[in-house]
Amino acid sequence: MKKIILSVAALFVGAIAFAQFNTSDVNQVGSGNTSAVSQTGLSNDSDVDQLGNNNDSDVTQNGTTNDSQVLQGFASNNNESSVSQSGTSNDSFVWQDGDNNDSDVDQTGTNNDSFVDQWGDNNESDVDQEGNNNISIVRQGWNGDNHNSVVLQLGNSNTSDVFQTGDSNDSYVEQIGDSNVSDVDQIGINNESTVLQSSFFGATSNNNDSDVFQTGNANLSFVTQMGDDNDSDVNQNGQFNGSVVTQNGNDNESDVDQDGTANSSLVSQTGDLNTSDVTQNGFNNSSGVAQIGNDNESFVNQQGVLNNSSVLQSGNDNYSEVDQLGNFNFSDVKQFGDDNFSDVNQTGNNNTSGVIQTGFLHSSIVNQQGNLNTSTVNQNGNNHTSLVNQIGNSNTSTVTQSN
Image 1 (cartoon, rainbow, N blue to C red):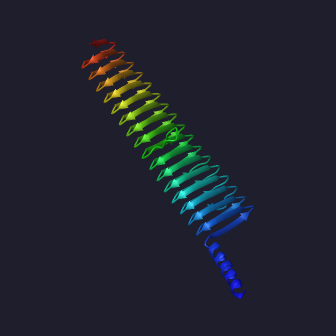
Image 2: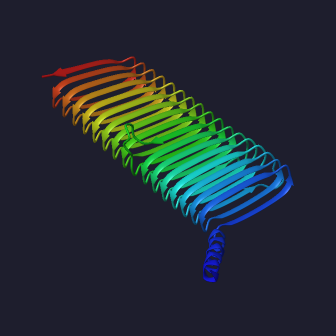
Image 3: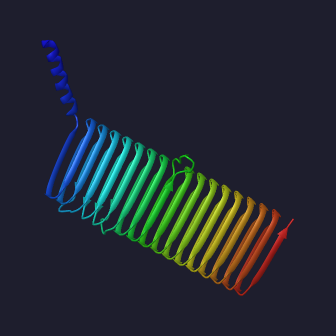
């Protein structure tokens, strides 16, 4: 009987030692602060420091060797932080220095890492990571208030970095798959960025890279990449610029640079190994690029006011280049088939160019220097070549070739 009692006592002492592997440290200075920590598992570590009034922190860790640290500023009030970690070796760090900030972090899996740093007032951050080795970094309000960031990463080895300074910037990042990378920098007021690197119908996207850099006010960027190894780079400097990039396939590249006011760019690429480059500098320029197929290339350069460019390429290995230097120029390029080449150069004002090439191995070059020039090129069949040079004002040219 004595041996049985001793054995039970030993098990009880062992259970106490087993439970003590988790560590919780809560320090609250101020009034009306609330903290609730619940840890289940082994070697989990939670550290909560709340300095100020009416701050609320809720940490739940279920698994092994998870680490959570919450610091809610110096003399900061009415901040809320909720952290939930389930799995192994997840790491969460939250620092809210200001008033009325809200952070929510959910991590499920192994070796996920979340870093949230919110300065100022009324900032909101929501991070959800499921999988292994994902990294999320959110820095908001270093110089301003009312920022909002949402990060959703499902898969393995995804990385998201969001930096917002100014007022009322909004960022949404969704990455579903493996080894996707997103970097969003918003400097100014009322900028909006959405990055979707995922696929419909349950498929995943892998190794995609999206970079968004917004400087100024009320710029809008929307990036969707579905497939593998796609790369998108958006730079917006000014105000009221809008960019939409959609890439569906593999190994596509898109680069959009907007400097000025109210410029708009739409890029859509479906297929593999397509490349689009759009540069807009000025006011109210508009560019639309659609490429369907493989190995197509499009380059658009707009410098001035109210220039308009439209490029549609359907097929493989087509090339289009449009340069508009001036004001109120219009260019429309359509190429259907393979290995077609189009080069449009417009320098001046109110020039109009239309190019339609259907078939294979066509080449069209249009140079317009001056004002109010009009050129139309229509090539149908195979292996046609057209060269149009207009220097001066109010010139008109029509080229039609077919076989």
